[in-house]
Image (cartoon, rainbow, N blue to C red):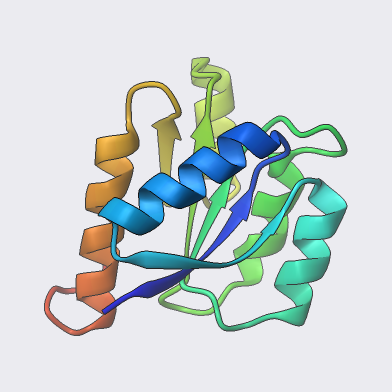
Length: 132
């Protein structure tokens, strides 16, 4: 199964590289993206056909924390992960408090993100129990 992913990333070079790489190596396709908190919240409000949201915390306009807060009302089976360059413990704790299913470091955890995507795809396909 291929999962539908939504990306919140304000830097075009990172966004383009991530989309290209992840669609190549993970079982996902990007169905949308936003470069701001407002854009992400509007997109998520208008679309229900996503399985995974990948959210950067620090955006040119707004923050990923507002996106995480909005995603608290997501459907079962929809996962939200944070992909960030900032790994301070207080930020990671806040992400979890706001409902992030996982937090990944942009520079070190891309393989872990790919494995998360595979497990999520398998759980949606009924191969594995739902990811926690």
